[in-house]
Image 1 (spheres, helix red, strand yellow):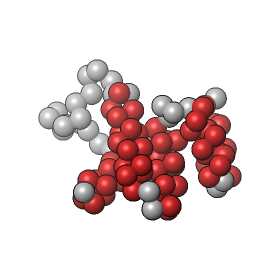
Image 2: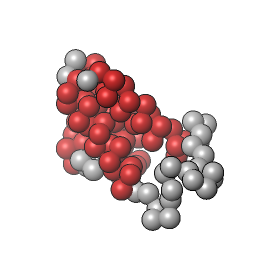
Image 3: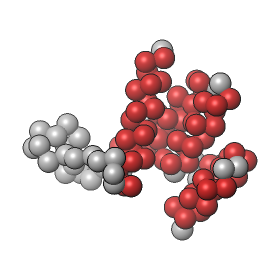
Image 4: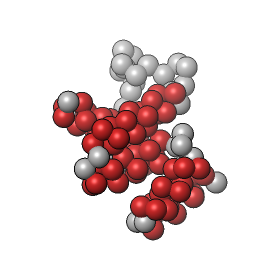
Amino acid sequence: STEREFQACKNTLDPRAMAVFHHHNPFHAGGNLQMAEIHLHRGEFKLAAELIERAVFFYEKGYHPKYDPIGRTGAVRLLNQRAEDREFLKALRRHMQCVARR
């Protein structure tokens, strides 16, 4: 599956492997985040910010139609302990850091 392939590329710690994965899967939110990390380490902040914005966009597109991101019902809980939430929270945190840089 795509997620297993992503995890395998991520675990190699090889930027070229992640670049190849990202080239073949440009809509994978985790792949965009990992490529953003690579570009941040290279000092390419504008490209990293663009990749982070894409990742946040892809996460938003995955919302269930009845999901209320503002949480007016009080039922929204994102916990860093849950693997499912961790990547989304990381994307939001990185996005806020990029916006603060502007």
